[in-house]
Image 1 (cartoon, one colour):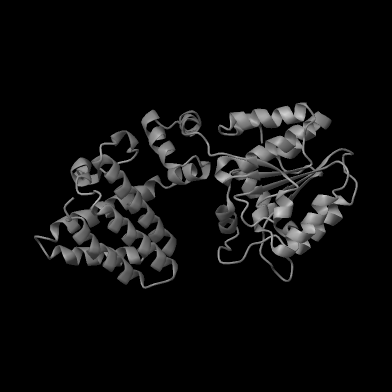
Image 2 (cartoon, rainbow, N blue to C red):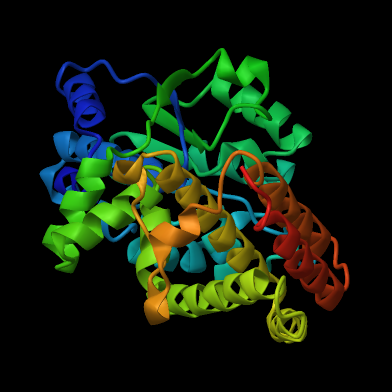
Length: 372
């Protein structure tokens, strides 16, 4: 990973480069932030720069993640009593080469093991200790990158603490974590923390225009939705077709909810709508709920004269966005969002999807006609 390939984070890049140039590299560092902010890309570029300073020929080895003195540890599930990461290193390497911003969800889906428990084990820490007891292959620095150190179990954390307190000579330890809540305080006290902030929206917008040839207007819409997370950006780009389907279904729902007050037969259409959605897999149903919540929030912004914050509107099949937005206000938005949240909760716990969607769809007909 090259510095120039990292989206934004210019201030942090400068700090990291300067620490290498001035030989102020801490032997143990913890990079904290969401993967989509660029945590691992920053760590890989940092490691590459450290190796290059010792040997300029190291660049391509780090870029292809096959430098013999660059070691990785990451969460895996136990299989045949083996809880070490080496058996899945090729899968991890392939994922990172394809998308250095990949997150924990990408990792579990990559292995088609979303329902298994992933963690960093004590056996993994023992394996690391053995690796680092050996001499460096290239005679210089050895670097250990522990990806998602917040997934260490207690036994692993205690073993790692001993390694952290007495690391072998010329060893640099770099941890990454989404947050520090589950990391032992004793580990935190022995590492230099590097907080990775969300990516500036302008930087995401700029990257979309330059690298994906997306129009200025569309890039701005997407960048508003991403919350500074490049993984969110990729999901939005890849889900454009799904968003169109979601938009059509949202409009179908809202139109019948408006009409049911004067034409009760439209209730039958809402029940059929709920039946169709209930046939989807759970993940798609939950994504649609999140889409609906987003649209209602944007409609509220439109209502309260903040159109500059409305980065996306619904306008399929002649749907009148501004007119719809007038019906979303302070008197009903809380109930609408609570119903969406409750539906998400029940789907997560495997409730009957047909009942969940029918109940929510019917309740909307009451909320949407409530006067402000």
